[in-house]
View 1 (spheres, rainbow, N blue to C red):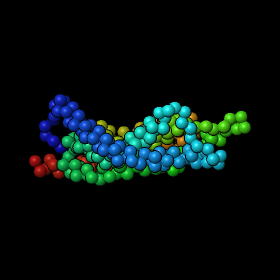
View 2 (view 1 turned 45 degrees about the vertical axis):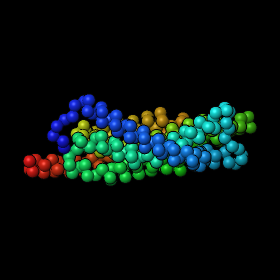
View 3 (view 1 turned 90 degrees about the vertical axis):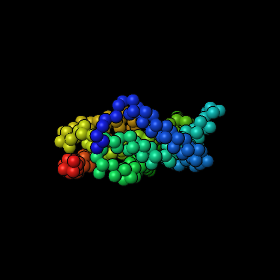
View 4 (view 1 turned 180 degrees about the vertical axis):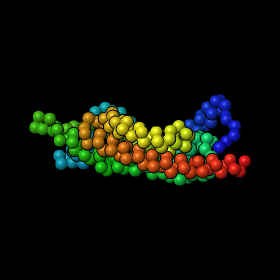
Length: 251
């Protein structure tokens, strides 16, 4: 761990530098993703189109600028995914001064695991939850009402859930850093388990549309990942204590 604490102004300056690099990486990713905007849009909205497929219907664009801005948002999302390794690297670089020298060596595994967890959450939501969700909503169609979904609304729901599942799957990493910073202990995390379950279902209700399927499919992985984070914190806590003792002996 670094001996001297940086003043607040230096922390803010470093944060600004990290954010600038983050935005540069995102901008480069967006420029690369723009060439594939239609393909990204088609992949993202495949679950919705699958729900409409029996009737052979397409999504509707009801505003002159709707198609352009939806494609632009597709490129923004694609650029974000492409920039994930750089984003997680910059986050690691910002918090790593508070870690021991041995802990700083896990930078590459942290970036790889964080990226993999985010993508796993996105794929899980897209392949399993979204089809069930759109089939649920399409099932309310009747002889009186025909589904005519707009691309903007469907894209908005899809991307919100896409990001929600990606961020939710980062829970073990968050618990890891809370343990590394000494903010929480394994005992505290276990004591908070009932509240974490309640929070998971509240988050599922807030972040997903008003259907039970998507709420449960977001809440249950959150609970599982919370306990995975506790296991990581327990393993990390013992290693951190040994590292601290070793550092004291070498001083």
